[in-house]
Image (cartoon, rainbow over all chains, first blue to last red; front, side, top):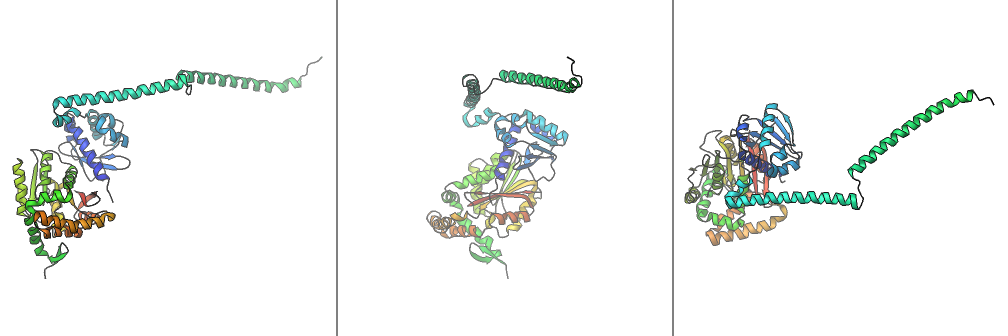
Length: 206
Length: 244
């Protein structure tokens, strides 16, 4: 039997602690909760850890955790790249004081890519690689955004496969007006129908 | 009459096993690293790095490397714990320990090295954050006692890492047997000039408990949340357990 949890747990522990150590004040804030336990509930697996004396997370055996964090697997996958952005969408439950600290700490997490690259390639190359990576990611995001806009414009304006938002709203409004008119007409017809027997009871005299 | 235990496929008196294992390692110590590289095609370096990555070490932590021999793991641990941390290299065999100590000195490390028996560790209770034993448990006479000792010296919450040969994936067994019993002794004869020691290596691997058995042994010794990961189709397995 292969235990996939071993690699996942080590990856989470190392990633989290790496981010904590790179974020000023993060370990200091968590140190106040040393010994408390936290469970990261990843749906398919659970990562239990304790806050160590140095303010880092240490994998541990935990029966009843003091706090539970439920990030989706998608958020965890984004963790090394987006840090706080990934974890801010997670669900939190447990001890309010610990949760408040965790929330504050996660919001200030930041991955200093440049600092990690510097020992490998040198300061200048690290700065340029980081800038290149950041610009490339921004370029990719811009390209996808532009592609999306162009595709929607084609489908709406050229191929007329989709309606514009304003047209849909106008149509919805027209449907509402029509529904109101139909309801009024229906009410009027009912009223007329209810008067019919009265006319039959008093026929006109020629 | 003295109890017996296995030494490879042979049965020997328990009191004799340590001396026989010592003979093996005295004989191979000088060529140990070269043979490791040749026998595993360098894979042992990756297995060891994987083990260290599971240790969850941070600067300032205390680590005990049991049966650390030529200090492969110790040197990796030292990089993780930094100047404020401590890594203790231990081995029962002086020849192996001397190789490890000299290698570290040559690389500028000066960690403490202690010659001691893994079954009777001369360290206080609840002292280390992490204890590791890589390719050493197999050679110990009383594995249960050694695991209990490792549990004793660990701090609550500390973790034990056991990197050891294990049961290979069934379809690969014939090829693995051929390699172990034919090629290994030949390599040992040609390079280390000691075929018998490498015959013992192959036999001792077969006699060592498999993945699930070792997991149970660790749980019996008091470790919790014991899990393992097979490396290279089960040629080697890394077991991890926590002291509670």
